[in-house]
Length: 349
Image (cartoon, rainbow, N blue to C red; front, side, top):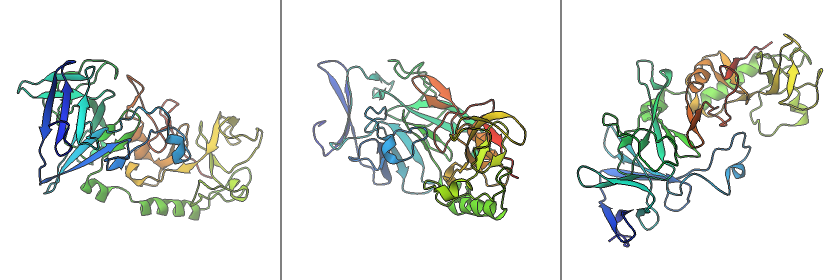
């Protein structure tokens, strides 16, 4: 019974007077995890990604495009612990309901399937001998309620599904991106987590940069990457690394030949190139780093700093934007990348 909260079920509204209900049985060998905007039932609650947001409340939008129950992931309890993703999640009554206007169809086996309003998109990386995050992204696909894979609609508002992709699956692999129309998640496998840089590695990078005692060419003071960049003081501001994004020269904060404001265009004292001048920030989310090799770059225009392999990887990833557009963005803050490449090599004095 669809109304019963004892059984997981999906209701497809075929017409105003006819509904088709598909019931789901509990499988002891599989765990289910749900992701969505609602704090009810979901195991992981996600909020909209707002570029340059400084605190969690900045991401609490009055009108969110993320579904309250966006998707569900089934994980096998036995090795190799395969994880599969499905569109839509069950509410607190254990129900999923697709209304009359939702995209739905009858499959060849007689079972119903459909897509959610804004869609759940996945992008599997190209695999290779050097690891998935070294080989660039694949192609965005849409996953259905039943877990089948389809090509993208022309726009997320379209009422027709894309072409079914028979040779691709909903199995999540290390590096798979999941787009929930407002937030993008990165799936890391147990093996991927073991190989990726750790939070300790990022902290060691910060300490090594400070130990090298980089200097500001203008103020001649020693620069320092703070352990807590969200709490700057007037005393530490001049020592906080800033970068000219046109050329990559790193300075301390100063007002040489300019106004008091950051982010506006300035002339670099060293090479005389004109471009934005902003605070340099170390990207602290370790799962987004590809490696920790000591050749540092910064995304443009947000100036989040990481390794060369990291900026080159993420600058090639087309992230969904709006109804039908794609653009590369900084993985640490979601700011759309600018300039030709979207990043700049850092030059310390």
